Structures are given as C-alpha cells and as structure tokens.
Image (tube, rainbow, N blue to C red; front, side, top):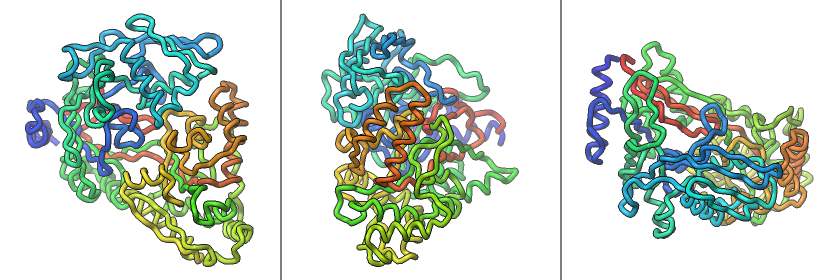
Length: 531
C-alpha cells in the first residue's frame, strides 16, 4: 500500500468519525479505531471489571504503578517506593509535573499532588468492589505535596502490583470532593495519554491525545504517531469483521471462533493487509454453581464432579476455538503463575466417563436423565461455546438447556445469587496466584467481591491468607496446592480453560503492545509509511 493511500484512508476515518466530534482533522494524524461489541458500561475506574471497561479506563486514567508489556510492575504516577523491614509501612514518592485532563470544574493546568492520591485510594478502599485491594490498610498519610505513607496491619509484599489495578487509578481531589458518585460513570478526568471528548453510548467514543501528557517522550518508530482512540459499538461481529476487512478498523479483537478461523486463513495470504497477534491471557474461564441455589447440583459436590468429568474440554477447545486456550484440567490458577510443577486434579483420570458415572451414582442417581432439568446461563459472546459444552451432557441424558442473557443482566443476576448455574471468567488483576485463587475467600462473597459461588471454607481462607502474605516460594506452593485441592474436593466451579488473547492488526499500525492481562498500550503506536 502506498503512503498516499494510508493518508487518504486515515483522512477518511478522521474526517468521518472525528471531524463531527471536533478532533483535529489533519491528514497526517492517525486514529486507532476499534470495535467494542460488548459495549462499555462505565468510565469509573471502580467499575473496570471487564475487558471493555478496563480498556476504556486505561486510555484515560493511570495508577501509581503499571504492568508493562514485559509483564513487569514499573513506576507510573509513583516515582519511587520503599517499605520498612516489616513490610507494613510503605512510603511512595509521586511524580511531579503531571497534569490532569481539562475539566470545567478544575483550575486550568491542575497537577497531581498527594491529596489526589489519598482521596482516590480512600474512595477505592471504601467501595465494596475494591475494598479487598487495600485490605489491612489502617492509615493513609500525606507527607507534603508529593509523598504518601501507607500503614498496614499486616505485611503486604504485593503492594506495588496491587497499586496497578485499574480500580486504584488516580482522580483529581477537587472533583472527588464536589461531585456525586454517579458523575464518574460518564465522565473521565485522569492523567492518561488520551482524554475523553465524546461518548454517545452504544454508538461511539472519541478520545483524542492529551497534549499535556507527562510521558510525551517522543516516539522512536518511523511513522505518524497515533493522535486519538476511536471506539465503535457494533454488536454484530460479522459486521465488525467487514469493517475491519474494508480497512475501517485498526484492529479487531478475536471474539467469534468462525470469524477467527476465517481471518487466520486470510492472514496467511501473501497479499494480506493484516497480521495475527496472539499471547497468553491470565483469564480463567469456568462454570460456576451458586451453592445457595435450589437445584440439586448446588448442594451436591458429587453431582457437580460428575458434570465436570463428562466434559472433554480439550476436544471442545479444538473444535470450537481452533485450539485457542489451554485446558485447565480441573485447576483454577493458570500454570504460568505456579512456581513448580502442578499436581493433577482428582477428577483427571484414564477413564473420564467411568469417573463421571461413579460420581453420579455417589450423588444418588443411576442415570443422568434422573437429574432434574438444569439451565446454564451465559451471555451472547459465549453462547456458541456453551452450546458445545452442553452437547455431551445432553448426549448422556442430562436435561440441560442454555439460556442467553445480556451481559449486564447476567453479571447482575450472578452477583445477586439469582442464578444456579452460569458461565463466568476471572481476569487476574495482576500476575499473582494469590489474586486468582483469592476470589474464593469467604470475604469475597458478593457484594464484597466475585466469589459468585458463595463458597465458604475456613481452611481455604487460611491458605489464602498465607498465600497473600508469604514471600517464600515453598509456602506459596503449599498454599496453592491446598487451595486447588479444596476446590477440587468441593467443586464450587468447573474450571474450563486458561485463555489466550487474539488480535488482528492492520499492518499500517505498528507499536501497539499488550501484556498478560490483555491491557493495550498505544503510547508508541504509529501508522507506518509504505505498508
């Protein structure tokens, strides 16, 4: 593709989508336009709990630390940090010269200071979704304009990683003091590289580059630097695919197995205008049971184990997801977060069907058809995969059907304990076994967290405490294996697979990077000449 075509293509996107929203219309400015089929529900960092919201928040906000594309925790709004010998007292120095995005209710050129950090962290600590992050924080002190101290009741070795969680993004203190909670759902005022200009829910979101961004250090790659992010909200994935193939989208997330397969094949052609980008994603997909529910499976671990043993997840992944993802084999924590070789789950055996039938008999049933009808709830994005999941159960005689709910409805009903059986996922907040397995702690039962199975076990709680506090590899390994063993024994969930991210990028765009949490970094993204 000639450079003149790139400029024309960029101009058409910019003019069509951006001029109407008052973005700069220079033909030399590039826009990273993508489709978010699942929609964005909130720009409040406290509600950055799914990938769509996380991406929107990460474009506009920043935390004290961040996980970079090398999967290392690095400074962001914090310039440096140090803890005392007990691991309980942390002193954090803040970066100077950091500007917040313009806002009518902020003074012009408002800069980051310790009060912004104190109020932002205090807000997160007092919200049920994020209180767990700073659990044990007794005192938060401001030492002048650019230093804070955090005093914990226990050792917190993972604090730098915890501070990278989107919920702990920093907001300006004057707005936190004057605006209601609802204000932050539709307004973004952070320090990120891109600022919110327009959001028409269900249609588009426009985020031009923030000219006063503190980390505008210059892009080394040749090409036109990205000058804005544009997001469209087309639910039909086939329509989004056509937009991508026409050149309207800079990249397309791998969301539909059939679309993925088609684009993979096209990308292999010598004349392909896009490439395939894939990597590990710390996301565990699972089926959850509400242990307080009414269906017999909610009260019988043996029945839940029987259902799990009837599944051949590896086969389903191969047939439905082109092999994308790794069979969890009954474990919940991704193996990349386990320091030593993991032990197999007790449900894994040579004859899975015989195992499944044995568990079924232990549950009090001689045949699957004797089990009362069971409904698996999911959202539209996973309907195809879940249809493949229930097929082997139906083939054996289980009376199982699929019910598809809108994502927001599904999440709300799961959190309220209104569904007995559901598909869910856990995206790690940072690369840590403690963060993944800790969701089963009893203090994470809704509304205080994502323990959607309402699972309680004192021994597991104690193991989670050891895992979160200890820095010794052997103690961590023992705690991980104990938690996995307890989850295997009680079976509150059926772990399915450890995910991978898949992205199709047009070759004109280079420098877009991601990490194991599938968080994107566009700071060094450019449109390259001659591609």
